[in-house]
Image (cartoon, rainbow, N blue to C red; front, side, top):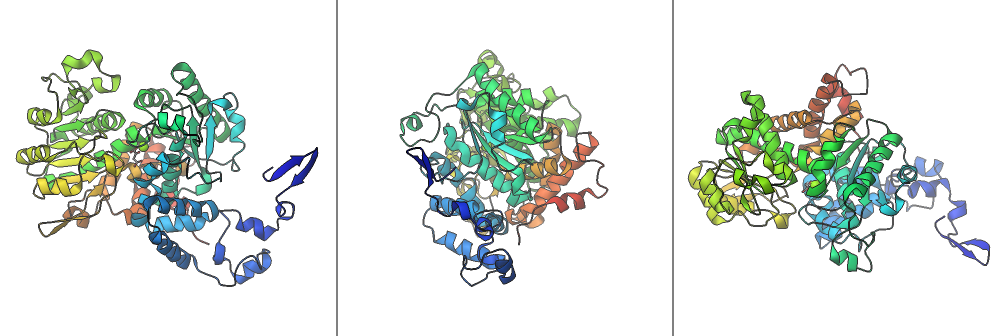
Length: 560
Ligand SMILES: O=C([O-])CC(=O)C(=O)O
Ligand SMILES: [Mg+2]
């Protein structure tokens, strides 16, 4: 029991209020029940809250306003992160109200980019409250029973990581927990998945980050990463425990696993349980949506583009494959034919047939019969792409020469700098607009402010999977999806592309307003849920007659 000490065989408590906690006190200490000054005088009377609160009452709207003002006074992004997370720990309705009503302003402090810094320092800012489950190697063989320690049994969505590839920041070990927490906050704020149905999980399989291993205050296991069959068995034990406890429609989102494991795990599990990998598939859907929406600006349809990727990891391979799928749908060509207009550059230069032997599996389909060139600039010159997609985590790799070259070859070059967080972006929007003389159709993975250039305002769209995974989660929860497929991702991308309003396109922006993300996520969710019913992969039966009203009706709205 928390607060208990044992002295000389007798058990004493140093938690004097522990034994006699009144009802009202418990309510104030339960984040999902707490309303702070939002309790009415009648509630204070009947719930035993009198005396525990100062006399003033405040509406939720007033509390939201005060919270946002307080957040603005914090001087660093990390302080804002800690402030907001501490609010989630004690008063979750207010936290979700703040996030869903001020999404554009607040999201960067609970999610990308600040969550990256929060993960780097997670051990230092650890807040002593349960925010999810930490499942470590020491718990092998007991994972199923440990799930019973979480206070809620009705879990429908899990985001889990092993911390090996946190954004573009590499191995953060157990400190990667910031990512599942942040992603699930968006499930609720951006798509209305009820917070009590969500569970963040970190699998602590060790870390190869030497600074963490040397840090006396690191909160994870201090040994090097588990690999091979033992690693797969540990992940497998977790997946099976989750399905056993929560049922076959629990949705499991892989997040920020390393390249060496991500593809294999996805291929192994996607046919067996309801899961998807956000870095491979979610990023793919958001990028494809951007390409589809960009046709309104470039006049180029997906099937007539030539794509060049800088980076050939999870995001690169995922996007490339979904684009090939979209081309196949549009043209009826074979997938092999469709892949021929997609090229990749990795750390060894252009991916091509002469390198086939040494290539990792996920790059092989994009190794074409072209001459090898050693770097991005030579590849741009040789391939003559219409779209350049950065997924490399190599900051500034889209330099002035490269963007000028793209602009000389294309009236409206498509330039996506998708690496996260901000510090890893391949270029900034200012650079893309300046060096293309305002013609680039630009998107970034991390948020950037609008840019003034030659008297015009450009809005850089945030091509982040945040436009996709909350809607997928809502669909899965609403219809009890038993699988998530590549077709779902294609459908989600189309729904997102269709949701871009005219005023955004006029500002060269190919993604919707973040302030409208709940409506956008609803559209994504309805489209995906319809596909789940059409393919017999929905377990909530019978199919609701009005799917949109049904999905809307399950959305959680923070309020009292
Ligand atoms: O978290 C984000 O902002 C997008 C993402 O999945 C990643 O970069 O790994
Ligand atoms: Mg990720």
